[in-house]
Image (cartoon, rainbow, N blue to C red; front, side, top):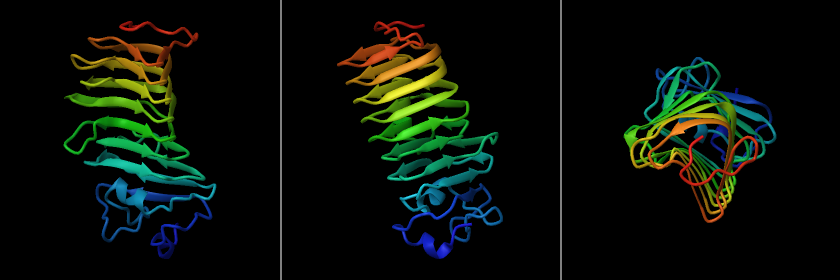
Length: 238
């Protein structure tokens, strides 16, 4: 359990592994982030953590349910943050990771809603993100991208990633970022690219059954690689 007195000091460093709990029955006002008194929103739990994790592991344990929020993780370093727990049916409206060292994601459904950002799952500015369990990224046929890495970030996963109904690219790496995933499947909305790599971005995968009207696309040094290291041509689908 975190010392609540320290949680008000954003410059302090963790001295042990910690777990903060979130539930749809919790409260951001009276909750304490414990299993008995959880927070109501995931963002509240994230905001209560210090920026420096001190080499330890912080876990945001999210109870099953739909959370009408797009969460932002920013500037966390020096440890590991686990977002979610394996085996729990959780829906978020978006996940953005900015300038974070080591984030592990266990959220099975990220689905577009009124609060969703333009990119449903996005890593930027050197962030390192691992998607640890299977996830469905659902754009609801809206003007959003599915999985995006930018500005030198890395998103990796050995799990199955399914992207549905995104009018913007289902998967997009740009500006020197990399996305390295095992299996990717799904169907994008009309007028969308399946996989796009631009400005030195690289997307690699072991298996792809992702379809989109515009196929795959590369530009300005971007590359799309199969498991054998073969570069795919534009507008190709494997």
